[in-house]
Length: 131
Length: 387
Ligand SMILES: [Zn+2]
Image (cartoon, rainbow over all chains, first blue to last red; front, side, top):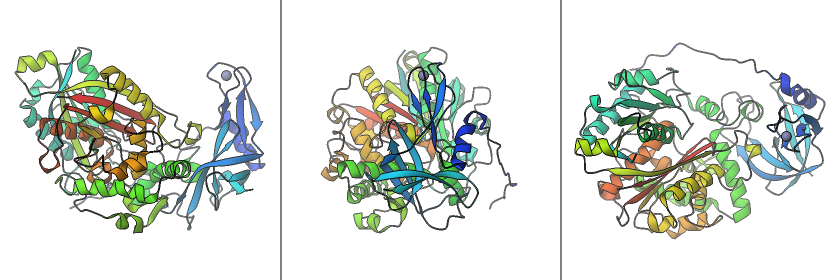
C-alpha cells in the first residue's frame, strides 16, 4: 500500500551577475573564459575571482579544439523530454581550457569549432562542429 | 587511539516498497547491534549518511535516528554524494579517534525508488555542477561515467566486451548473495545486447536504482578491551580527497584523480606497497563497469590502461590474486548511494572474519581495501581494514 505525497515543485532564480558577460556572450555567438592578470590561471567555466586574489579579464575562446571525451545520451532525463532523439555531450580542449557542448557524429581526437545557439526551451549553449 | 569495527549490519538491497527510509535503516542497525553484542545505550553518537535528494523527507537524519532508538545521541548527518557511506564511517572514526566518543554508529541509508526513472536521472545529472552542466547539456549520472569510458576506450583500446566482463563477474557474485538486488547470472552477450543508456554504456553496464541500508559500529581500543570484545576489524588507515565539480576542470578522463590521492594517503598511512599481494579482498566503487576498470588502475592493481586486461585475466574473481567486489559490487548488489560505503565495511568485515559463506575469499594477510567514490570522482575515500 502507498500514500502519494503532495507535489513539491521548485524553480530557482540563479544569480549570474558575476558571469553575465558569459551568458550575454552566448547570445552573440561568443564563448568566454576568464584569465587572471596576476597568476595567469584560466577559468572555464569562467569565474570572476581568482583564488590568488588577482584581477581577472574576459577572453574569447575560439579556433580549433580537440575532442577528449563524449557520450550520446539515449535515456533522457526529466527536463529534456522535449529532445526526442539522443543528444551527444562532448568535452573538447581549447588551449588551456576544456569546454562542454553538444555535437553530432564526433569521436575522440576530432577537431572541432565552437558556435552557440538556443535550444527549443530558450536555453543558450555551446555547440561543436567537426572541422 | 586505534578504532575498530565491532558490529556490522546490512539490509536486503533492491526495490523496497515495503518500508520507509527510517524503517529500512532499522534493519541494518538491529543487525549491527546484535552482531556487536551491545545495546543502544552503549552508543555515544550516531552518524547518518544519506543523500536523499530523491526523498520526500528532505531532512531524514532525525527520523532515522529516532526510529533506530538513538534520540539524543547525535545525529550528525553527512553527505558526500555516493561516498556518503564512507564519509559517515570517517566521521564516526574521527569522533572516536579524537577521544570525544567511545562508541559510534555509522548508518548509511537511501530510498531511491520512490520517484520515476526520468526524475532519478535528472537528480543524478545534478551531481556535478547544475548551472554549467545539467542546465545546458542534460548530463545524467551514467553520462558522466560514459564520458570517461569514451576517453579510456580511445586512449587504451579498452573494449565494450571488457566492460561487459565486469558486469558478468558482479552478477556471478551477487547470485550467491541473498541481500543483493540482482540474483541472476548474466553473459557477456546479455550485456552487449542490452540497450544503450548513454553510449558506450548499456543497461547492464549500469548499477540499478536501489533502496538499502547498512550500519557499522565503531569503538575505541580502550572501550573494546573494557567490553571484552575480541573479534575486531581495525580501521588501519583512511584516505580522502576530492576533485572539481565541473568535468571540464578535470585533468583527464581516463581515471579519477580523487581516487589516486585518497589511495596515496591511505596506503602511506598503512604502509601498503603492493596492494595485489597485501589485500585478501577489495571493494571498489563500480557504479558503472568503466568505474571498476579505472579503479583497478587508480588503486594500483595494474598500470594505467591495463584495467581491461586485468578483468579478462580473472585475477579479480573469487579465487583470483585480488578478489574484487565479492558480494556483487554496486553493479549487481545494488547502489543505494549512502548505504554503499557502509555496506563495503560490512563486506570486508564478513570476509575478514571468514563469515562470507559461498563467497568467502582465502585469508592470508587479513587485510581488506575499501574504495568509495562520490559523484564522478567528486569525492573519494580509501580505507585499509585489518583483522
Ligand atoms: Zn590568479
